[in-house]
Length: 305
Length: 152
Image (cartoon, rainbow over all chains, first blue to last red; front, side):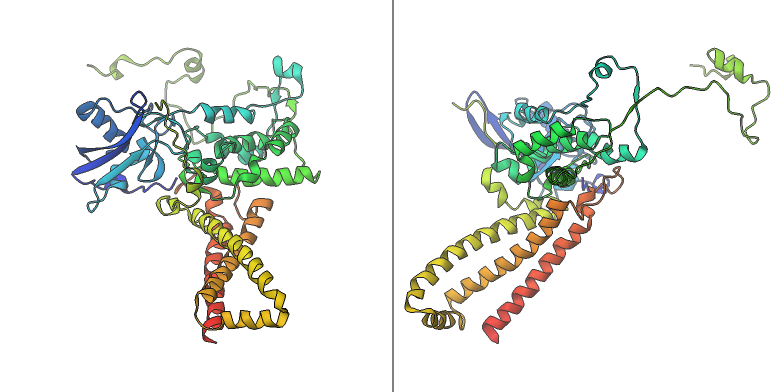
């Protein structure tokens, strides 16, 4: 996510034109509409859309939830670039020479109304790659009593891909996803690699054979736009290339993977570690008594209203 | 009446200059150029087959004589030939980079935890330098060939 980090410190132009691509499903027509709004320092595109909805045109429809780049539901195309509208500053896109922000619904997604897009196909493709751990031991899977053994470096191999928030920006930016409806898309393939690289997963044979049959991995041509627009730096482009290397190794019968064993949970020792000599307790504090019950705060230390 | 608006960009996405609007993404420009040069090369192969076939009936030597006549000096055929050579140079060099990146997953860095300035590992790996190398090398080779073709 190459966000302009200093954009928030700049003041956007006083009045900004927001051009929105709209669509009305009952009239069955789309049109461009321009709104003029007054801005303030730190205003995001989502703030601008909310201001339009509150003050100018309440028929404008868009999807949002958390307003802080965590839920991934406010993805739109701002000035030709797929972005989360809550993370895009007006001052980043509108300049004093050209005080205009063009907002479109996400490319490659069916539009339901205005800026709201349909994610059904997206999540069907997500489901196709089996985004869950597969273990061969059915008994342990149904009634787990043990823990998985995983080393820190094994976690690092796939941790990056677990950060995906399914916002769909990568699919909107991908040129192959745009022209080939059967292509699974960067998001689903990144998730396929996330579970392939996970040492706890034992379904690698199933996954690789399904991916080989589907052929989506070979459709990628490394335009790397997915990694460039990802707001969580998930790097789907890198994941697809690694998936392709894994498939090559699998077809040459060279693919190897260490899968985690089920181990007994670690025992918690009741032994107390001694405090270092420089850490002395305050006078009159009984640590063991403090740990048994809730801490007692002296009355004189309580703040008055 | 349309209840849903299909917003798929289609094949247009392969040529749309999103590389210019997307931040930090010369890979997209390389991809678009790879597509365009590929189309030029397909056109060149057809033209080449047609030209060699129709003229080769008079024998190899007469064909070479005609080709040399066509490629001497600046004329539409020599310019088209020059463009096809440039396309072949870029397509070949970028193809080598893509082979290494796509088949063997080389030069794309290691998975890492996101940290400022939040650039994905595959975008700052060695393949990024390789892209610039491909751009510069193909321009140099193309210019050298142009010098030999037109001004030697």
